[in-house]
Length: 448
Image 1 (cartoon, one colour):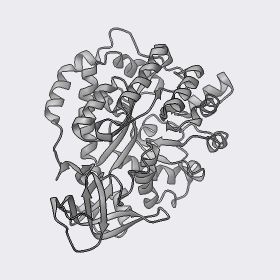
Image 2 (cartoon, one colour):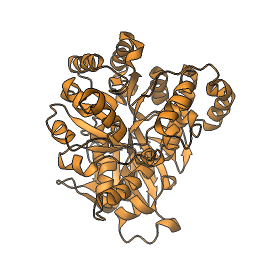
Image 3 (cartoon, one colour):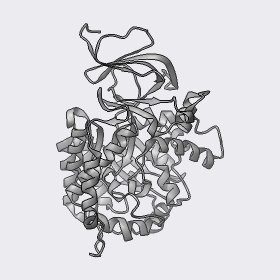
Image 4 (spheres, helix red, strand yellow):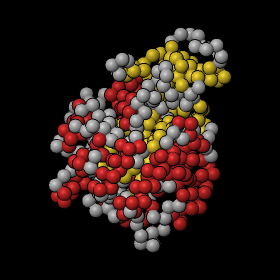
């Protein structure tokens, strides 16, 4: 330790820790010391070293900041416009026609609102897969969050879609003082040709970039792929070389038993993001096979998808729903446990976005992405099992303070880096033009 004051000291909290077997545990009355954006120490000593900033966190639990492993942040602008529809009508009749109206300013305003929502819900990092991503990167830089960003493309855009995705990834890699990482972002095997996927895999290997895409989102997609091509979407990823890269697969509720050895044999680092609220809303018959993926050692990160399908960017809710859905679909109340759910929300989510060495646990040397959760409310008392209280009783609104890289972005529920009222006002003015579907265009056709 140096003699100069630390940047931030948090005292009196109960801290979530991982042991050498990666099991989740808790240490009471802990002190967290942060210097230069990094956690310097986590101790239970009564000493509070001198610091530029001091937070008294008695009655609160310190957790690693949550990671939203797959979302389309700007789609908060479409929250609630496409309700109670099957997937195909949701895309073709509402969302893709509206998205053909999107301007860079719409995307920027949506990203601002999304970042405000996520900071208030204890999300410190998000993996975004959308259009006009330069504007999202600028919002991330300004608001202080961490993000894993990819410029989405369809094969219908021609070669320039893929080239733009690469250009974005190379230009923004390591931006915002290292808070931005990037990925190549083909939309999905049903909207991107095998040739384009193979070319993307080649670019990923050449430039050391990961890939973030949708695949086997639901069982219908998998069955359609089998009927038309004789292979599952996961097998398409294997034969095009995508599974030889570091790949983040969104959803995977259509992953079949035959896909498991394919995923196990991948030479790249494979992760899956699960966003259970949307699966329930679309009445998809299956959910992400978390238990089967776990048995292969594949991390499953928590996600929300976009707010147009999920109505929310609340990863806290995703954590509880993942635990509940796994109990229901496996018929086993012992899976997932609350501690397992917290592991998915912390280390596994950090690994899913390629940041498992720097985030996901509150330990010396890790980046200081920390949230403080207030458990003094009547809905979280008394506490018999702290993990269960966090997963099944606490809510995102119990997050009091959100810190990224040692910088406080929200203190006592007050946002410090974003002006929500101004964003909401301008978004409201832009809404009529954004929602107009009279032109009859759409950016893509959903046909699976």
